[in-house]
Length: 126
Image (tube, rainbow, N blue to C red):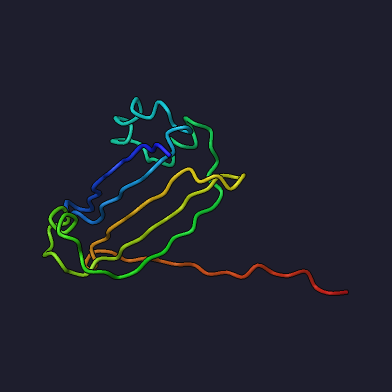
């Protein structure tokens, strides 16, 4: 399937922290090129929801520690092979259609994840 590829480098206090590479199905975002400039001031998810009217319903994310690939290490200003947190995410809308697939490389020395866990309560038996 033809996709729109968006590769961004994100900074915190002047430090490069993450490289994000998003893939959007072209059939769902055929005129996305006209929105590229908006990414300087708006989040990608705001554009997806507000401009294209897709309500992001769920995501599945996997995170693992890996050695930084050379290309990403250079952009993150770390030595190749330094630890990074590598993440893949799949974002879906209400009918289980994937609207975004994301690859991310986070600097291991400047990143932290806060994960909240909860349980779905089962109805009590009567």
